[in-house]
Amino acid sequence: MGKIAADVQASLAHRAASGARVGTAARELAQGEGWSVKDVLCTSGPGDRPFEELHKRVAIAVVVAGSFGYRCPSGRGLMTPGSWLLGNAGERFECGHEHAAGDRCVAFHYAPDWFERLAADAGAPRGARRFRAPRVPPLREASALVARAAAGLAGAGLARWEELALEVAGAALRLAGDAPADRGAVPAAVAARITERVRAIERRPDAPWTLARLAGDAGQSPFHFLRMFRRVTGVTPHQFILRARLREAAARLRGGEAKIIEVALDAGFGDVSNFNRAFRAEFGVPPRTYGGWRRAG
Image (cartoon, rainbow, N blue to C red; front, side, top):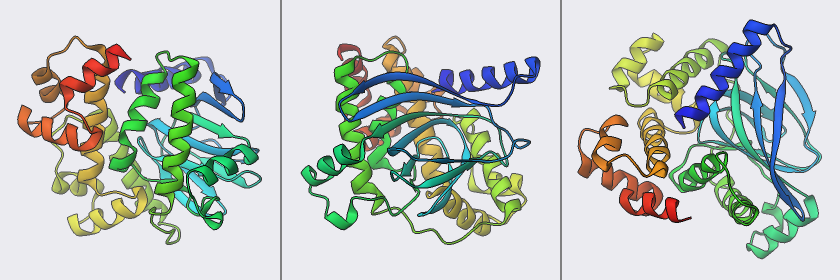
């Protein structure tokens, strides 16, 4: 995940040095009958106006780096690493970078009739086949798919992307129903402070973060910060930090060269046993098995 975030920073630096216009670069990774997946990198920042577009297809964008604000008819939310943007075909939406620049997503798009058939096959009730929430927060149930989507940026075959497109769609239908309802706009100053802390965690997930430290850096009481962080991101600070560390560890394990103890300590875990338990709870397999499976796959 570190390299993915570094690519975003390199693009932002290039834009600043060259004076290039703000934009979104989309690279097609794979496509099939009724579905497609793209690597989408955006260099918009606080000085750029939010842009409004139309979801021509059903959209599920897995955020792998950066953050941005997202607004659609079903609500609004801050999109952070590990969260999924949800969009219904035919609906207008707006994305903006009011508080921080740049993001990168693995974006899956589905033809409406194809998605309808998939939802029916998955057993989704007819009334639940359109997303009623703007996002899926960085939940444990989504972590393995986030890691696989990020891994795919380094190169994946058509068959693997086709499977992932199906799994992401099915998971989004399940998880969107559990997503917290939109509770109105968060004050801009509060959203800015939360976004700053989110970016700080993304840059250094291994740092010794505590609720007191995060709250102090944001100029808030721990109670208020905890409540606002969960409202803005959909998860608690502890959950967000834990999943950021585990995603970083999963990326290291894919290389297959680092030792488990090195991965655990570099990711910010104090001991290997704690790391093993957390990793298995998040991804369903122990670190050693995950690394071997990724190399074999």
